[in-house]
Amino acid sequence: MATPEDSPQVTAQVDSTRELCNTIQFMDALSQEGFGQIASIAELLKSAIEKGIEDNNLRPEDLYMSVCAIRGKAQDIENCINSEAESVGCNYVGKLSDIKRKKAFGLTAGVASNA
Image (cartoon, rainbow, N blue to C red):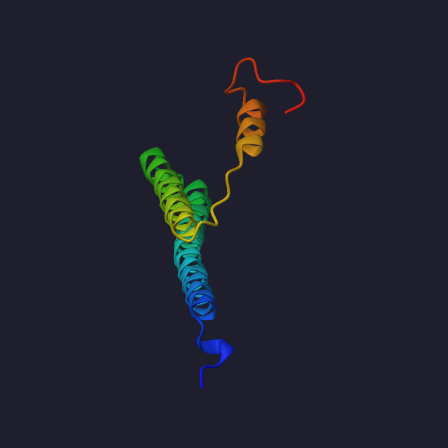
């Protein structure tokens, strides 16, 4: 005898829930790895600045490359997490926050004052 759990709707719902759970776990893994790497680079940068100031051995190109690495890693993780969220139809579309951020840094012209 068929049970309600055997229905196509329930099966689809279970599969959908499983897919969402797998996606969330993957996004969590991406964020832990990526943000851990960012924290490590930032810690090295902090140590280099402290040591460089003490030893007068601070190379601007090393600082620049470290900051570029942090920026690149942050963008990579942002894109990976967004892609995974899109794959299950749960991505955030934050137009208002983008406008506010750009306005705060003077990157937009003609943005409404209430944004």
